[in-house]
View 1 (tube, rainbow, N blue to C red):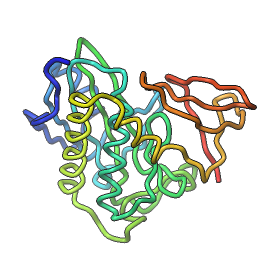
View 2 (tube, helix red, strand yellow):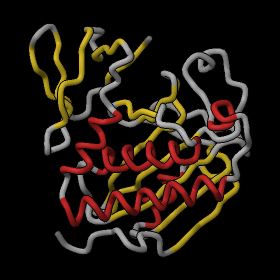
View 3 (tube, rainbow, N blue to C red):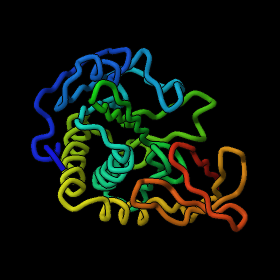
View 4 (cartoon, one colour):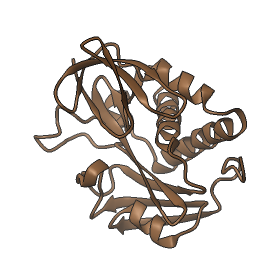
Length: 235
């Protein structure tokens, strides 16, 4: 594999107070090795164009640009960010929810959105850091690092930890292949303590993650592979 973006993946850092979207800013820049951080996003988004709640000064919004594109970046990023947040919280109770969320006790603490344009992939990472109150429609679905640990975190601490773990997992992927990434996902992404549902509302269980990065689920005794579809969870 050519030119793996592992050691020294960050060549330039852009720190913003407010931006429409760190992913948009990074993709407009059009070069790999960029880290964009912001204290607030006016047009933050999740998968499929959903709005990402982005209050100012309480959470971390960041994007890393990588090249060349790779379909499995979302899984690599999920594994890396889960490990980073578990380190910050000194806890193993942090899980990966397919395809792009990190959850604690069933509540979302981080969302990841990978977008590609012109040979550059933007890995957008939004971490709920110090927020303690939520809109009514998010209160039962969101949690922050501060709510979990009962201490405040500096954004530099969170950013640095995420970048360290992302660099390590990219290095493993480019030098050792997808096997170790898959193993880590299966260790923390099976969500065995939850009821899982497909987009159609069918009960399912996670069975495997194949080497192409497709999630294999069981629905009423039949295996199904997911590439872009989501699963939802409840207790």
